[in-house]
Length: 136
Image (cartoon, rainbow, N blue to C red):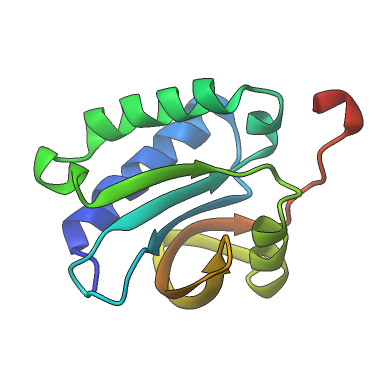
């Protein structure tokens, strides 16, 4: 089970992303193992990210993590995964959870990148728009 502090701090990162850059199609923590005290991937997707380089987007997210997540929780976030809105995982999540928004909804989810996921904490999940050919 993820710590309450990590959920609260990650929610602040999500709120800052939305306020500064725009809506998110998906924002969640995804457990990387069955260990209840294990590591988490921070998975994000948003239409505004489709036009940016992945490196740039990950860099701005990491800056927000360093600002809003306590040092004791930094090491619990193992990866920042930025996915395009037409990624199959984003599409599957928005189909199964079309309008989740809040402090963090605990769910069991199918695997990201083919691995089974024991649990996830979803902060935002909305219908994702496909990426236009011009944006790629």
